[in-house]
Length: 259
Image 1 (cartoon, helix red, strand yellow):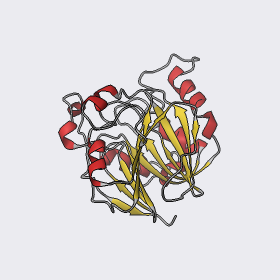
Image 2 (tube, helix red, strand yellow):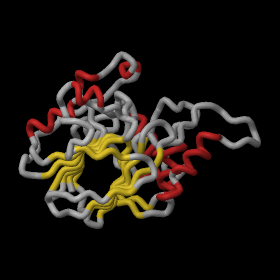
Image 3 (spheres, one colour):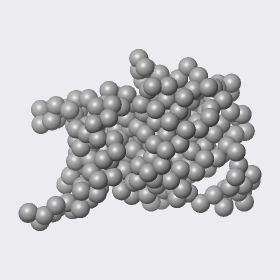
């Protein structure tokens, strides 16, 4: 398996038979709001048009949902889209990117659901969705026995200090929403690690590493702060699980995993 980092929360997975693309956006779609923090974006590599391409979008936020995904239909005939139900398809239909809400290549995914789509490759894919603590869904995939988790924006968004003796409602909600995956084996996980959470920047990732039996943990949503990733990994004396994360150093960096 080859994993390519495409910036922010965007990743491309290549297996022997197919590709999986998650939350990838293009440079021309960066908005002023996104520019408030250094935003990273990767160049979409050229793919083998003979392979099936599965495109996943966790939610409609502009740093996760890109118009670039519709152009892939012009280049790759074997493409399917798995979109969060919060994405408004009306503008997409009006622009002519899809034939309508019942386009056979489009699959709408809601939170707390299970899907077992039929793939052209004959690969066995089970999709489980979790509700997000922000918008949309997180994807838990089982592909021919290999498990892949993309969190989207399902994270412990603990922005503010909590009075002594009180529970952090954001953390409580995060732990509740992730109950379906507690204790599960995950071969490849894409997990938020956001430096903007200045008081509790590590809370969500620490919780993920504790709840999941993960082999390869890729950080994402870190706003191009590669030093922040390094500091997190090097702080393993505080929490040995932090040493498990894969250190990303640049856009379009590739990782070959023995899966």
